[in-house]
Length: 457
Ligand code: ADP
Ligand code: ASP
Ligand code: MG
Image 1 (cartoon, rainbow, N blue to C red):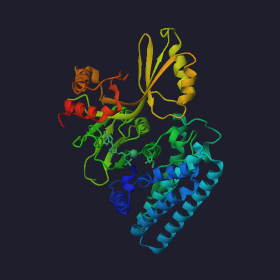
Image 2: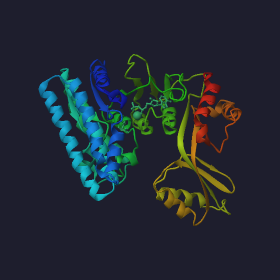
Image 3: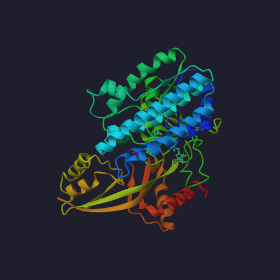
Image 4: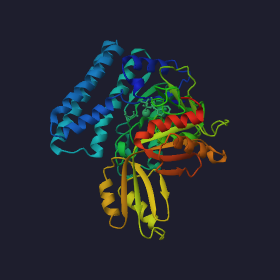
C-alpha cells in the first residue's frame, strides 16, 4: 500500500489536478490512499477572510469567499463532464462556502478567532480540493471515495486527550487505519483531506502550516504503507532552496535523521513531523515532482546513502528573533531550568541555544504572540536583550563532525563574504552546524556556502 500526498501546486488549477489524477490512476501500486492540500493560495485566502471578519471592514471576508468559490467552480467545469457529478460538485462547493459565510458572519460579532475557529475555517481548503479531485477521478470511471478527516478528532478524542503529543497522534493514526483499511480491501482509492480535524491547541499551533505531509505520514503508518510519496513542485529535496540558488541539485537519498534535521532547519519541501511515523514502521518517504513524474526524486530511508560527502544540504530560516538573557550569577544551578520553564509556560519553542558564563542566547521564530508577556516575566529576574530580523543558516548531513574541516569551511565562507555571525550552534547529534546571521545577509550566505561545498554559483 502507498500513501500519496499532493501539495498545493499539484492541486493549483484544473490542469494540475488532471495531472495529479493521471499519476494516481496510472500508479503501479494497486492499493493507495491519496491525501491532498488545498488548491494553492486557498489556505491564505481563508486566513485573510478570518482576519477580515474580525477587523474594521468586517464584510470584506465576502470578497475572499467569492474568489475561493470561483476558483473551485472554474476548475470543476474543466474537470467534470458528467452532469450528475458536476451538479453534485457545484452544490457541494456552494453549500460549503455558504456555511463558512455564516460562520464568518458570527465571528464579526464575537470579534476574535479562537484556534478552534481558525481550524474550522482553514479546513475548507482541503475539503473542497479533495472533493474536486475525487469527482474528477470518478468522472474518469475510477473507484474512489472522498474522505473528509475534519471530524475524526472531535468524534474520538475530545474527552481523552488534552495535548496534541506523540501519544495523541499514535491513537489518531490507529483510528485512521480503521477508517481506511476496509476501503482499500475493496480496491477503492480514498481521497482524503490533508486537514485532519480540530486537534487540541488547533492544527496551525500544534502542527503548523504544511500539515498535509504529516497527514500522509500518519496514513502511511496507519495502513502499513511500504512507501509514503510526497508529490510537489520540485524533483526532490535539493542541496538548498532553489528559490535562492537556481542550480541547486537533487539529493537522491537521505537518512531519516538528515531529512528531519533539514525539515526542522527550514527546508520547506517537507513538514518536520513527516518523518517520525515513517521511522516507527521503517517506511520509505519519497519526494516526487508532479510535473516531472519520471524523475527519480529523493528517497528518505532509515540509513540514507553513504556518500563521499557527509554534508548534504544548506538550509535557511528567516524571521528569527534572538534573546540574550543575562544575570549576575548565571552559573548558579537551576537558572537554565527556570528559563526553559518560562518559555514552556508561554508556549514558545526555542530553536538554538548558546551559553556562556554570563549569558544565554536563544533563538525563536519572530512574531510570537506571547513574546511580550514572556519578556515582562523574564525582566523581573534577568536583563533581556531582544534582536529581531535574524536568520539561521545551517549545513546538514550525518556525522559531519567526523569529517574534518566542514565547520572551518562553513565559517570561512561566511567570513570571506564579510557576513557577521551572531551565534553558533552545533546540533547535539552532530548532523548540523548552524550560524545566526543578519536577515539581510541570508540569501548571500546561502549562495556563498553552497558554492563552497557544492562548487556551483
Ligand atoms: P507543497 O505545496 O507541494 O507542499 P511546498 O511549497 O510546501 O510544496 O514545498 C516545496 C517548495 O519548497 C519548493 O517549491 C521549494 O521552493 C521549497 N524548498 C525550500 N528548500 C528546499 C529544498 N532544500 N529542496 C527542495 N525544495 C525546497
Ligand atoms: N493547505 C495547508 C497550508 O497551506 C496545508 C498544506 O498545504 O499541507 O498550510
Ligand atoms: Mg508543503
